[in-house]
Length: 373
Image (cartoon, rainbow, N blue to C red; front, side, top):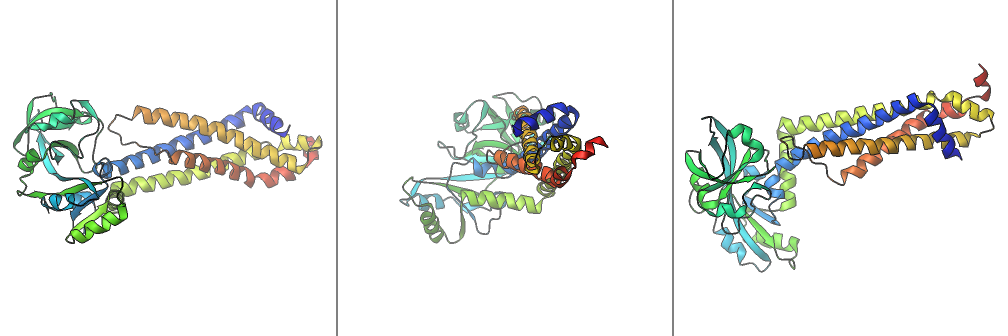
């Protein structure tokens, strides 16, 4: 009965209800949008690590992020491949280059060289071509989202990176890195482009067998290669993201703006719900005059806040889903983890209830006689 009364009051006072709903919807969408861009930047920072398919990375000593590793002996691959816990081990080579566009300009790119025929960690999404396109010596990829920078790129045509000829054999889809536009090629071609010392690579990737104990394997490899940095994939990803957040303005500024947005959201939702309760004091006075108890008013206020919160959260997430879908294959970095959705919903719900509770004292203390004033 009290829930029905709460709903009728909301429907009767449409202006206040709509204003409260708009406040909740706006904050859910705006905070979600800010968080999606922040997490999108995080995914760019460690994109190669997160999509490597490896369990362990071997880098040079004291590596603080994936892009700061030096050169390792490729012979390490044979040493770790002999371990019973290791399913496969693959060398990886990457470094900076300049792509000569069709307009005779130069664009910075990050070359990623993969050993054939396994091609780990190769590109995982293609607009045209496939991983097998990189098996040829001069083959390389470009990202479809970078076409506006590279010019009129055509498949199977030849271009230059670091004054070295490459053939665009495949086009990736929505694969971008924080430190540059990713160009995948085979290991031999990458060595030629980057002019790397023979017998050297940037990192070695290991995939463990399903029966292996990850912690025990990690410690064994550390003892086997004391001059190298041996890291679990999750740890290297975390260290890379932490490095960019702390040492670059981009990660910090987006993190700060997200915090500011969340703080503003707290204030707006709290004040919105607080004001909505205060504006309905005459309704509560009528209910008191009709015999409603203070506990009835408390329940009605809480039900109203929950109704507004649930509807606002639903519409806000619907708009957020449209935004994420519209930017999925765009240059704007957006990614919204699944575990963040319930957290944002619960957070918004709690704010709506708290805002109503702040005004609860005035709602239950209203005198029935006040309706005649």
